[in-house]
Length: 68
Image (cartoon, rainbow, N blue to C red; front, side, top):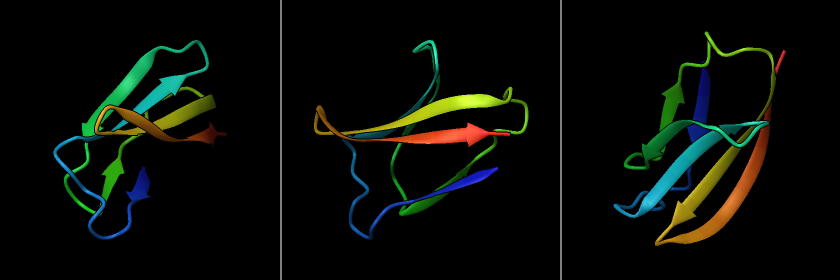
């Protein structure tokens, strides 16, 4: 389980978080409606993943996740 935190007031009807595997396949997508939430990654394989945040149709940030 991982917890994702956003700054207060960041949540929006147009903000989305997506997680992709190393091949670019989208594994998870979530509309950000709270300042924090949890994602169950317990069944995901070990490896490198990318979290991408988009708001109002514009790319904001990409972060890496490594599952050991």
